[in-house]
Length: 449
Ligand code: HEM
Image 1 (cartoon, helix red, strand yellow):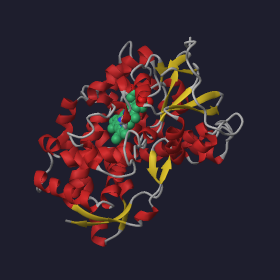
Image 2: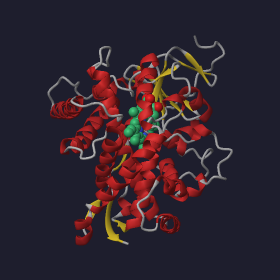
Image 3: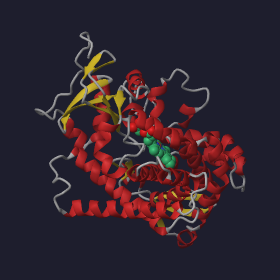
């Protein structure tokens, strides 16, 4: 029960019933920056799908919510995404989630990633070499698209041991992206026809789900023939085949979750880093100087990664300004008093790294791109939950170590090889969906250094 002393959180003014949520539907990024300075760290935005919706941006309250997964559940708020994530890690809670996390987390252990690192570097180098004809022709390329392709190969190889990933697997990205857009729209636009109505949108969604099923199913069938390896696909296939094994829907859910979580987010970080670096010649000069000093012409090793300190700061600051996972959520398991405010059991608590990372009281001059904010001697007084690109608490991103290793490799190897010019940077804008995407990709012209 909520404490009798708990106060009602402030609410934003808005329309009857839905409150100010219509602004979340149509202009969420501006809205999420405006609300915290005027209304504080916990604010009621309105109601959606029969539930009260709150925005939490206070770092101490975020710590309370994110570090207590049994008090604040993940599943109810992610139920909308179940058609895609099934019963996998992303949508489970309680004992089931703990058991799943125990099964999956070891595949992302730093020791295992260090062993996979030379292969990752070779995959990235081969991907970058394949851009040769575009470079020779001086063509405009969409770097966001090219990075997605490399990133998908890295995840499939490093986590599932699929070095020569089949072309269907590489095309998963398109089906997954389109299915995620559909579900995000369905969440914010409840007036759209339900899934069983055969509209063109619904039929497209069904086709995408079928393509994902067929592809993930084929990966499972193939590996089930010999699942003696220690990669995650083999581990899951063994668990599927054992006597008290995992249900197939759960295995498919885990695979889809890792694929979705794994490829686009990292490509986005790198896309945003290149966009920001291009607009800041001083940062670019420092980055080039570090990469040349540490790497010279070598393929990076784990030791090099540790020395690429400024490269990592550039990535950290890029994820602050443009966090790819810009919005997620939790639901209290029972009526709660959060930071002294009453929140009901079925509420949607929105957690937005975008909103937190742009709070001027946590990040002075928040729009300024300044990688030195992440220098070792900087930000010692900063609240750890004022920077949450990977979430926080026990449910923090399971792929964080992989994403950071891959991010540093991608950025350093790109800077080592290329000079670049972004095309029409003034038209750069963002589309918030399940992830935060660049509206028109990242068009650029590359030259070899
Ligand atoms: C820069 C890249 C990435 C970002 C910004 C990111 C962000 C996040 C965030 C914010 C969460 C927490 C969501 C929540 O608490 O509800 C999360 C969870 C998750 N991420 Fe990532 N992620 C990234 C890369 C990856 C990679 C590379 C993988 C896998 C290969 C991955 C797989 C997952 C999974 C499976 C979860 C669910 C964990 C759980 O609920 O226990 N992510 N990610």
